[in-house]
Length: 151
Length: 306
Image (cartoon, rainbow over the protein chains, first blue to last red):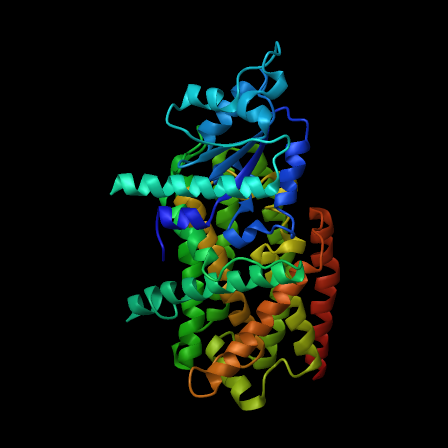
């Protein structure tokens, strides 16, 4: 049986966290899971519980109310866990960046609780499913680096 | 020798490999039904291999011992049922009085352990899942035991070896009207025991998150996945042993056995892909009314000699 990070690369279970999005990114994520793109080919499956997740798909601008929830969700997930910031709002705040209730882009919010968190940025408004797949490929490359470091 | 049986050949190693391949077959057929390409053949091995290196966080509200013990007991019980069936199919003389009842009890331990583990986790979603699993268990055990008793009365013995010997002499029990009806009843009851789609009410991803498995992660979740895979292997073998003359592991018998096995797995998968999820009350009513009446009809037909 292929063990460890090798099999993690081939079986990524994703959990969808909607942090006050406008739903465009969410619709694109659902597109990604439909038969047209069929990410189950790569072992990517949407799971219902954050405890099962290997990757959090975070969409939307993180406001003050959702910030503690997002941090708690990240702490509840079983490590190793990758965070995907999907869409321009999650990456840098987009045009909400000067908004009064903006609590910071996803990377800053996550790094408050875990400075070593692995964060993958998928910009776009909304990003295409293809660019999300390319984000996953880059995350897998990062896991390869992690393995090389361990050796 | 007993340890070899339990850990290697009809037991743990063999059933895990066959069970995970069967689970892949199930996912692949599902994908083809939905016009997708589907996962690669080793996908379920990757899933379990990955779960083994994940962290196992234990919730603050959980009872730690029971929470971690439940998946281990479930896995051990599933393995025991698989190795019992395998050994008896290899040699009919290994039967003992009432081993059918023992097997039936052992096969229901994983469901009970899901209830216990989910209740110990202290998550509200999990406890809803646990209560649904318990309701479902109470629902499907009644028609299951009536359908099994059809076979027992026909053979006149509670030993699995005697059932196999009877079928070798008089032809499989499936080749009669009562046999077909009770086989269908057992097939649907085992569908519920496996938690496949029309009866996946305890997991119910879209309403309960992951239901009973919500708080599990890492190796503990992996143990439950392996339990499900082993039960997916055990259920068709159980039906074949009771109704279709068991499995012979010599000569052309192997090919015939694989065909029977694939037929039942395909039936499970097709039922899973063509039905929407039931509500828990619909499910219990279905088992207590429709399935129980069918099972009793089969029992009456059997006593009339059909």
